[in-house]
Image 1: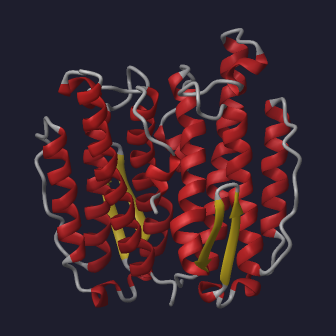
Image 2: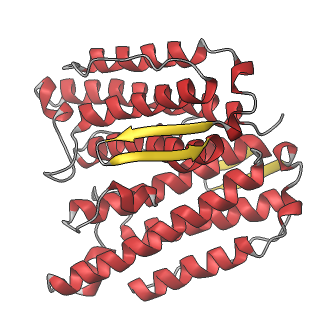
Image 3: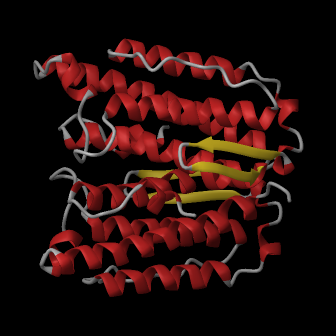
Length: 167
Length: 167
């Protein structure tokens, strides 16, 4: 067993997006049991100027596919942000994991030192690969999965921290 | 630059607990500006059966010191959970970082394969070092710092995701 860029990214991505997919199943069961209209939870947010649940899931996926593509030298697949149901969000997660799990592990070799440039509305961020993964991509994945979890928890869904951390 | 257990733990711990300490400063300024009694934010939670802000900060610190101690073969320092103010919580964060930054980086060598046993109320968790860091310690650190951030965000503090991710 060896710490590596691949080991810190790909198993973490599978675990966190897998947990997120299961959280969405629990949200679905909760909404059905409580007769909550399907769009209500997906549009819920923790502050009026924060993103709602749907966008948290989309961004978590985008952070994972962006990291896997940039660190392996692959093209980043583009997903339209059109999901309007739990089933569609779960499909986006599955599509994201299919993409990252289809990349040959060898392509991540020496990605610690890869030059990474992220273009944001506010300008460019430049990183070495290790800094990008550790200080930007993984914290963002955890942030958006935690935000999704906490939106559901705040709304009363019957979930606990193990649903976030995973087994 | 090389991916290693040390590189994934210690810089991440400094970044996330450093950001958490600055979030507490912003919480303090916000409470003062809005004339919010000091204990109100510290006792806030996102669901009635979730931990409040104070406990989120304590656990984030405990996850960091536990991980640094276990992976380096050091004794885990014990901190009493007695903080009742932002200043005391910031002191706990500082004490945690003093501890982890005082450990020789060489002690983390080969910690990927170290046997780690965590005793919980619910039983024992057994890991190899890499799994412990990647699948338990780091996700817990991110979870509790995100929960602290989102409690403050939900209460109207003027913070944004960059305060969580850091510069």
